[in-house]
Image 1 (cartoon, rainbow, N blue to C red):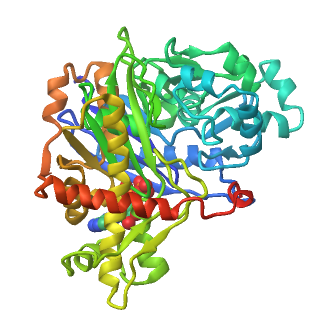
Image 2: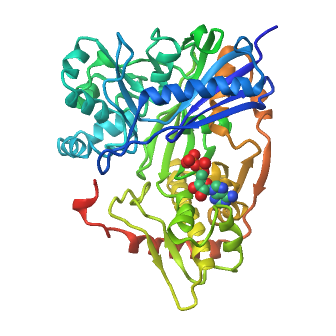
Length: 504
Ligand code: ADP
């Protein structure tokens, strides 16, 4: 019997998940476990890498059990993961030398400011597509080497290994045999030149990261290595690795340049595939590697993120108490015919792309004696949709052609009300797939292609059934009015927070 299943490991910021897919791409077993978040100081966010590995292994075993599938029936493992988060560990013992520094962590803001002052940002943008920011892995690795006693010397001697979460999982799955990563994860470290797909000596020198510490970079569908038999009951090849947003783009089958997806989660992430040339944004979006198949050039993408998306709905629930659960927002917002002139800018932690304003803060404008909870709910959903429209505008301007369709996923994409509003503000159709687990699906697709279980792209396209399409109905005048009012509201929200408190 040929092996007929794919095991996708979906290692997220708050939980580890595993999903078993059968040969027709249907999820047949799932498991999920949350793990601890460490906030040792203001602006710091840490994970225990051992706990990440333990919860991930546990969910892999549980998902196989739930699916009733034996490890010997699994053709390949695909990994998708929270990006940018770094682990540094001892090669000899496999033990991390410090807590993992999570992508949200701002502790390296002073180092970033010093690098900016040295004038290297244009070179960094050109080579990596990324803007100089503590978000990315490079300064996090250097911070660990500078703050753990003896670490820098040990790194130079080759005793330590560093990597993003995918490489940490791969190391553990292979019982320490393999130290590798894929191009999409490497493209988020700020250390890889996205044109050569190799670690860049000048970037390594600028960020003070010794080359001996880094994993080998492979295409996303490479034969990365074998998961040891003693872990899951049989040896299984790891044949696909993608960062989480790239996995969603691949899972949504955005195979042609100009195709885009937006994930409506806690925050919102929009990626547009731009083809095999590395695109550089003129509108403060990020350029990133979308994926690479073995023997083919890499595909690239433009990326923009909104910091507060679905979490604005959680604020209505937890902060204001005007709804008891997230889905309740839809009926409340639909109970009024418009927001009664209210505008809400959910810039609770500043504004992301394309504004990049850490000083912005949330704003509610146009409150009158007639404003009700329903107007606030509606204005909040409109605020989420306007932020996503800002990303789409920037992408269209960079691409030179407007978006023609947006594929959507993530928890808040379940809201028909929000999706219709989004279609109105964009003036294009939105397409929601039946399977909204696009991240795990993307990793499974990549691994299934890599190991030969699935052979062509049209086979995968058939696995992506559409649940619903949302068509815009507003005329262009109404859309333009709404967008103009939003732009005025954004201006009011900007530069509110004192500069000296921003990085705390
Ligand atoms: P993440 O992966 O970022 O943790 P999810 O993709 O699970 O997030 O999405 C969770 C978000 O979706 C929450 O912020 C919640 O407010 C929102 N959400 C979930 N269900 C609904 C719904 N039916 N209507 C509107 N928002 C929803």
